[in-house]
Image (cartoon, rainbow, N blue to C red; front, side):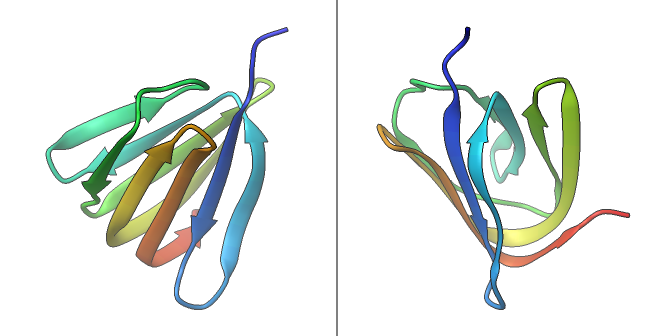
Length: 87
């Protein structure tokens, strides 16, 4: 079984997602990027776009605008200026 990534998505209003996932693809200010478990640490600003959360063959999509993504040994945290789950 593949390792899971701990992912948390937080907007100013509330935490929209927190849990273990397979992969997260996000719209970085310097280009889109994907994060898997054990990714090298980095921090980047986000641009407007879609953040995709992949887990067990399912994909959840969130529309985000601005904010930051922080990858650490503990996982990925996204602090978005605006975020909502796409319909």
